[in-house]
Image 1 (cartoon, rainbow, N blue to C red):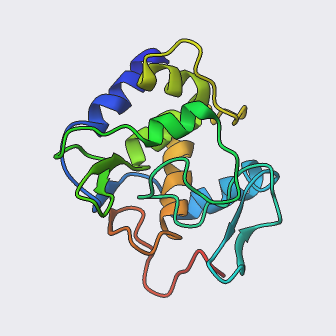
Image 2 (image 1 turned 90 degrees about the horizontal axis):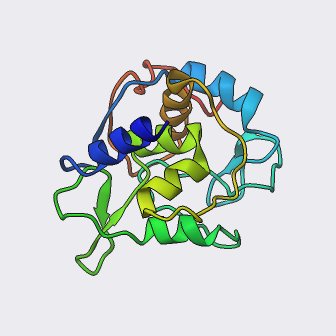
Length: 178
């Protein structure tokens, strides 16, 4: 697992973008979200309309999570480790970073780090922060990396500012928001 987390972190620091190549299948991700995520999470837009899930309130609202800085959704108490991860400032040309408005780059949820996080949230944070005591609040682990990639692809369909390429693009006429 450390190798996977290290690989994801390496990919995160490798090259630029908010436009991401997706390897997940959004339709499969929708199915998996309904099976694995809805008891804790919801996807509700700015107006409060629930687009996916029920009314899970254990975890944060996942609307716009793809391409967003970790640990910043208002009205949710993240672990200190996840907030610290979101405040990391990698190299200016790192994959999975975006300007904060003050010209400072920050970590964002890109496919590589999201997949690694979903597979072992606490292990990922410990590796990324180089802190053996770091802990995340999410206890659930998505065992299969393809399933985690599918979940990311699905959640990316609810991220209006994220430019997607690859399998995550929905076919014309398809919508995850049905």
